[in-house]
Length: 292
Ligand SMILES: [Zn+2]
Image (tube, rainbow, N blue to C red):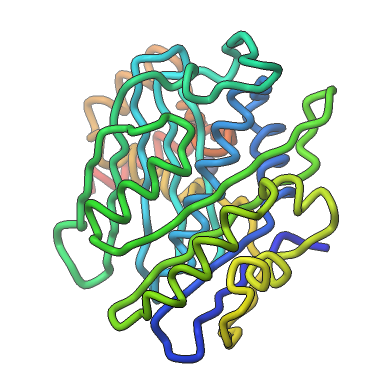
């Protein structure tokens, strides 16, 4: 089954839930960035959080998450849109952090720091920016803290990534549930009880549950309506055209300098690790275009 995201809302439109299975896209990120287990789990959770928040956006809006910490991982950057595309990277993919009670400690890898969320809207000059201190470093609780404190929406977030011994991601996903204005205390209590009884997301997905099944567990006892189901994937926004645009922005003097020193220009996309080369001929053509 391909990675999918499902959105649902309570019958009275005051509790919403969005869930996603992200196993393939997190495995793709692991392979692209050659992350070791701790970084794989950290990046996988952040990518899943990003795609879930992206699922709450509309049209051309985008969301960017940046986690900056004092731990060995340093930072995670994730970028998602409303169409089910997400990309991301960690600063140090090869860190090794000792297990805590047999478990990977993302908290230790990230350390104390901040979570910054940027919401980029097509018609707005300045993106919406929210920044909160990390409250747990395990990412799900930090996203919850952002939603509650910065967006002021009572929310719960669960994220899970399961990796097999050889590093392969075999289950990944998560959900966000939110109480919107007018939500009944009774319904909120039902959801809270459901969540506290749930096994970890990675376990549910490992057992074959999809986003709909997860939503039905979270919202069990509440009438719900499914709104949307879509495929999601790791997809970067980089392209040769973008690299060329950056070269043009550098200006003629800089391009001449690169030509003299390197003979060609190379660029590596941090988000997807794709390599780009602008050949000497292409650079000379750019110079001609700039100067004409
Ligand atoms: Zn890229």
